Image (cartoon, rainbow, N blue to C red; front, side):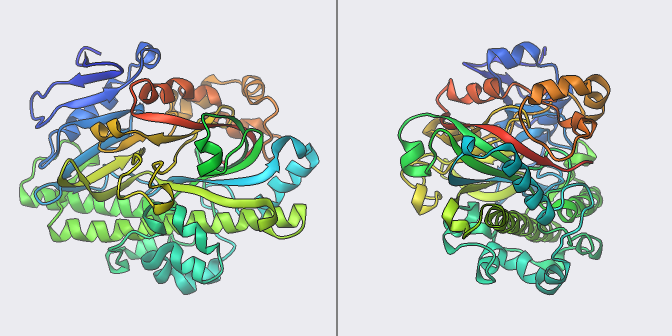
Length: 474
């Protein structure tokens, strides 16, 4: 990468050039840098650095790879008053995110038949796969407007969760400013997918706490080694995807009319204060709240599945919410005394201890950040440290792909996938369905996590290993 200059430990910089208004910075440790060759993703960071109002620098995460407009694993902050908003810099699956449930069950105490029954009970309630519709379509249709505007608090009011869940969700489970009037009829028609995970890298995973790092994991997160956990990874499904497409087209037309220079269609943008900008943020907030509700409904379904299979009440097994973090989102935040609109695409907010935007229960720790690996490798729970302000309080959202889905299906053999999964249980017996999600298609999660922990931006809390994974086919 001829454009990348080493700029300190695990940090590389592309100096401002051409139309760039600010620099671009990329975080990679030595292990990741040796194999990194994604020049197109770097070009996308540079394109974002040319947008009006952009703040120094545009940031690439350790899991960076090519995306639509901004790369996946990209962070772009703009001045809240003078900057632009870009649908492509938020992403297609608005508020794709991860939540973690803990249990009081020893993972090794569940035999394979019991695990299989748990998987089947979850799949019965949470249909995996592209295009799958909710089993609750009548409720979704009846209450859709309230889900979009009021988010998880409305779901809790209706009995889909516990009141304490709200203390452990980013934004308390509802992003203000949502207005369904800003959402197209076409997007509304794609809203019947609450309580579905979709396809691709989305999943419900039963895991085991493999290792904890310090007393805070147990004392403040309730995580202990050997304990069974549940990770849920999904977002706003086709609803958010349609909103991104709708507003990318609208922003492209509006930018031409306003004579704004836009680097690529994927970074089509309009001023935040324009009518188009305000409408996008209102529609995006609807998708954010839809995704929070989606993960909340799945949480309710998972709790019911445990009760069905193991008997008793779901609280008998704890199944408390540790945290829920958002990816693919734009939010107004204060950084360095400035009010910014921070676009995080394939990136996660990480607030350190003492930051006032932390939920009260995590004010003295920093809220947990959930970083899934792949269906055969570790996932991590980490927290931010004060130095993470340098990335606008942002860290990577996962491991990051090294092979496209098509390349993975072409290059990875079924037997290699089977071997890499080992004892990890998956629905069905046709491993070909999971080739594009094979661990070999992803970066080394250990190197990705090391990139920020080595320079003091984050610290580890717990390492989780998969026991059983539910993924939907594309």
